[in-house]
Length: 294
Image (cartoon, rainbow, N blue to C red; front, side, top):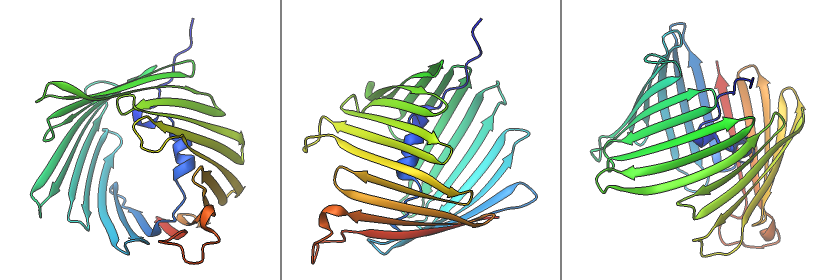
């Protein structure tokens, strides 16, 4: 008798361990601040702002979120400095166990543009599937499914334009997840772009990963490669480093100053331009982020 299979990750989370290792906690694009608070009435507020070091522009957003875990209902409203209003309502396990309904709307009053996405997500032992209807764009229906068994993962995605009556995008992926490592291979953009990634927890304090991307439509030949690692210094701090085949070295340091307060610092160096006297454009980047979570 076979053991019950766990719920596999969603399509967008295939290869997530490697993607998080290589993309998160490197705040070298500017300076950011995020403040999160919660009320006894289950309402959470989040204020976030970021100053881009290249454009010197400041963007931010204010988010209010109400979550009723007992009844599986979540309401989220966001207002950004670009005057974009976003609303989201989520209903989970109401109609059937493992079924989640999600409606996300966006309104830009200045331009009169709007969007609405209706998501249906269903997950059970060994399967995780999703359907998305973009009401005002097309309309377009996108579906993706991931099957999992004994650590092996098989997934596919397709987008169908209802008005034009044709498939506009398709992709596929295979992978294997184990407690200490994960390997994923994607065929994206109508199988014109291929990526392979791996993640390895070397020890409780060290993680490593890499990702390679080959675009058959790219004007530049070759494979883009990025490799990185993460090491915990203690229970409150860790460092990260990564480098790609273009010679860009990125470093990150994150420190928990106290419970609910976290600071991160990032640095990106173009190792091929270290000796340039007057480089054309910024060759190196530095940034920081501060998070308060009360």
